[in-house]
Image (tube, rainbow, N blue to C red; front, side, top):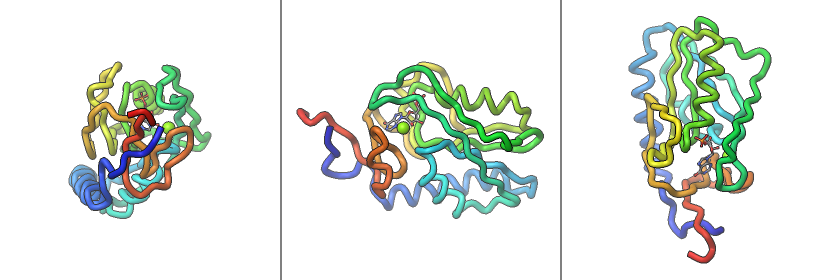
Length: 177
Ligand code: IMP
Ligand code: MG
């Protein structure tokens, strides 16, 4: 596997997208009623760090949830969730922050676990959406970019834990391509 020569999504596009999403989210939650961001580890950390610094919503709480479903570039189908014991969202407005929606399995598992905790509302924001790969229907209220069926890395996204620190988003291509 090797990285595409140019980024699929460059720095300036990412920055503009993050500002747009922050505006959309603020328009919904700016009434002083507060918001809990539930950031999905590990992939969404860099996106969420940028997003929350643009987000004019108060009071804002940030929590984390860990989800694991991928082995290399293939979804293994089963989702492992790790929820910290102090994650309390009952009666709170919750926005899940994801790096990428692919088959929809991970996000479905996260949303149903959070729904069980009886939040006042539950919405989803994803930086990337691979619509054509969906197996379980999931709709994100806030979507950064809809992308074709590429395996992408960088800006938090990994391939076997590598490439998360790249500042832009690249396509990982088979070496023979
Ligand atoms: P899903 O459960 O199939 O929707 O997969 C979602 C998870 O798989 C994401 O949170 C990512 O961690 C990972 N994933 C899916 N597609 C990609 C990709 O193109 N690059 C890196 N990780 C991906
Ligand atoms: Mg991953």
